[in-house]
Length: 495
Image (cartoon, rainbow, N blue to C red; front, side, top):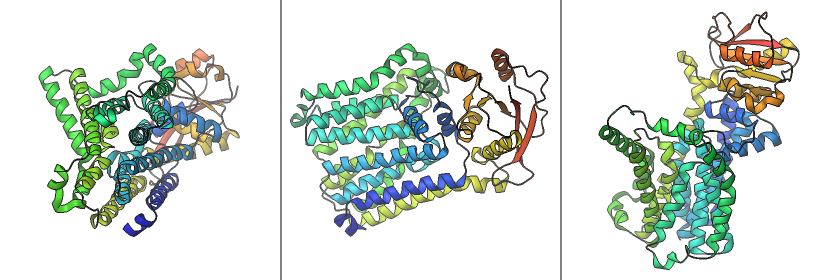
């Protein structure tokens, strides 16, 4: 493996491309039903808006573009997510090559991205906006380091592009460029890069990208911030001291959980020279180390400022993404060659990444053996086929009260408009389309009753269903026993 990396540095890039292609293939093969984030993306891909609520819109815009070009499907969502993850690793590797002389260490840094749990596990289970932000961090890292090592107008513009994309990918991304700029201030030879006139061009590019959504945020501040802040305050009823304790504990726990695998793997590479690596220092270890430290210091201040008591690992992965590069820089500063630890490192990364992929993919098949069903086991495709067979056509308009149902039926009835009572304002022009399918979920043995939100929406649309008896369709779960069924209830309106 080391010889291959020496002779063909692109071999690791090829291996990563193969891994993400495998991720796509397994996701498409195992189930065509959607997870939570996938359902949300499928539903929102009908609309192009400046903002969509508590999440920044860049990933939604990409999904909208793909859906318009190719059509809404599980394939377009899976390709987008894994494509961004691959680009994240690619630009990370390019950034590593700018500051690491040993190509083997640059390859280790790139592979090290897969040691982060939100990348090898959570992203393959159900992530979207965080994936876009990871790509933005890697693109920024490449542009930023290129600006420091080979300053040019193109490098500054690329950095500005990355900052703009990151700002509309995930709001907590903005801590990374701020920390990076502060991190180079103590370095006299690099400080001039901040006061170069070309940084104005970078700021202009970033502002042009972020400004439209920024205006929307100012006009919809509650919608943009409320969701995340509420999620961070799980213990709001407790006193301030206890909130501080729980918040700091949650932050420390999330940092340890998010970095533990990475640190252990790199410790195995250097084995008995951990203290030597710890003490080693270079220009680049100082800059990257400060960036990581300042990012987490900012997070700590936010935690204390908003009295947060709950922190997720996936919220911190944007800062932990710098860790593999930092550790590789420390190894090079200590003048320790990666042999023979590189072989063990690559083997362990492959085992972890592929093992997690098998577990994530296999749960849809294995869990039904124990009578436990997940969203991947719900038979949406069979329901869509049964409706089309029964009615002789697909619906033109679908109304449901469940975002999970909405997203799944969006991929099954690609030409139909899918609506929910809470989002009727976005599809007002399509509400007259027919045939209309009203669908909701209830227990398979329940007496079908039209939920009040759907009833009120139908009344507002002038659709009379008072004399219509809802129909029931109970279908077996994917990979489940024939006796276990999922109940769909629906009303079909031709005119």
